[in-house]
Image 1: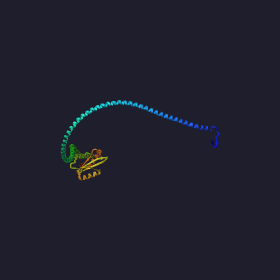
Image 2: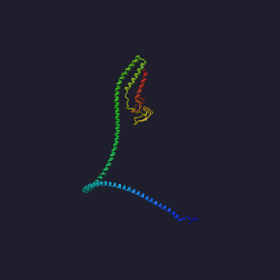
Image 3: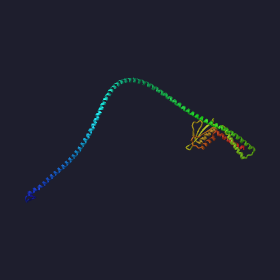
Image 4: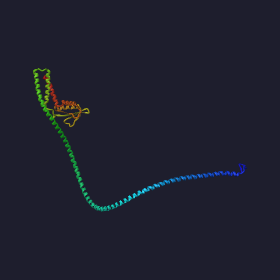
Length: 356
């Protein structure tokens, strides 16, 4: 055989070719055998693992079965107890059933009786319906009467309200009259007391007046007193004469006079003057200038008939000096009584120089 154009001259060239083909085949066979062995081992290992898992599962199932057997035994005992209790309940229910049957018989008898009663009640209902219709007619009649009575009651209530208003007005007038009577009684008491005191003081002043007159006459006739002592005696004589005239003259009264009411107080520290004339029913707030202008006008019209009534309310906010000063100023300037007193004072003052 030629190889690449050369002739093979070796001996046993066919045996060498056989050896070269044997060893690769042997290696392949051994490899296949090894792989088969490995696969068999893997299969055996996997199978052993599955068997081990099944064994564990079987053991767990056996334990669960044992637990189930134990629990089943306990449940059987409980079921026996429950069975006994249920049999007892069945016996009691049978007794109750017998009782219910007896009650049913009684109820059937009662139902029969009630049916008869229902028939009687039906007849009574028909009679009551007839009476109800009659009562409906009577109710309508009573409603008409009630409406008339309500209207009459409303009229009577309106009349009573008017009468109550009149009574309240009369009550207010009566209370005012009672207060006026009480004030008059108090004034009469004070006047009586003052009259008694005035009589006593008048007697004393008469005696003192006579003594002073005699002393003054003696001083003038004998000319023993000095000029200063004579002036002192004249002053004392004038004061005694003023006091005597005050006691002899009538007391101050609002009877027959034009009474002007002046209310004086302080609001938030500011003076407030309220004026009310006899023809007015309410006070009106004015200033001091308006007050004097009004009083000047009234004094010019009424003359010695003007009576000034000064009212100082409780909690007026005024001091004693403020209240007394305001009252004295109005009295001396406008009131008839104090006007006469001031006039007499001026007459006495005019007489003193003539006496000297």
